Image 1 (cartoon, one colour):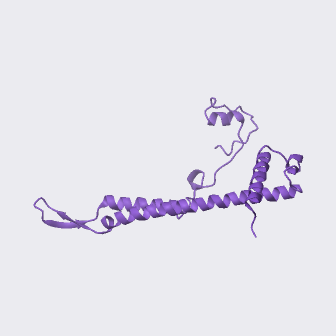
Image 2 (spheres, rainbow, N blue to C red):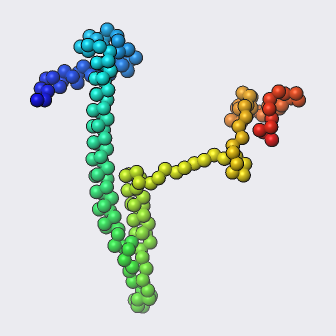
Image 3 (tube, rainbow, N blue to C red):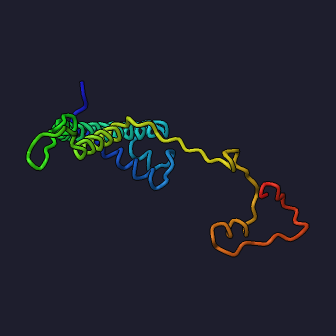
Length: 174
């Protein structure tokens, strides 16, 4: 048997107060959290976890509804643009004679943009892989830099000059 409306409201109020206290940095073993009716710090911790999980599930359900609505809108637009993008139409000369057929390239572009939007909405595209490399595609050379060198790189000060006998290793800079 489920909880009564009154019991659900009490749990919601207690969890809201618990969340407020935790956001203020109050520890689970604080007397203010015990005063909410929790029997132990672990009980409070588990209750907050349940509240956060319920909220996450509600958000996921809302996102799913939104995604479904957007997919239906894209379906309607795609259905309208598809025939012009896939069925050639006659091309006529100045006298009205048919001299060939061609696709409506604006409709093709529209269909491609709709398909791209659907792929992004549904997470169908693979993430782009980026890799930072050094000279000629080799490994990136790393070295320690002084504060002055770093500031010069980001434009905060003029470039430092290295004195002879500096014990910094310059081999990575060459």
